[in-house]
Length: 107
Image (cartoon, rainbow, N blue to C red):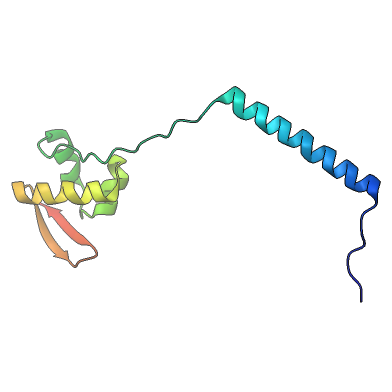
């Protein structure tokens, strides 16, 4: 039989004025900063012919898409493409893999 008691008229008026003031401040901030620009993330894989990158990869014991992506700061999908290109060029060799993950080693 309980429940929350109704607010008094004075309390309702105070809440309404606070909400109005907050909305005005938000509108001012939105107008002053302007629209935000979206930052597009590039999905560009590194150049497989770059000797410096290949040299760094040869230092690693096992090459996985996650390891390459974290090392070079690229997306995992780009790292997968990069590793596939290196395998086609004969720089690295596929050791083991499934449809989820592939493990390579440097030759």
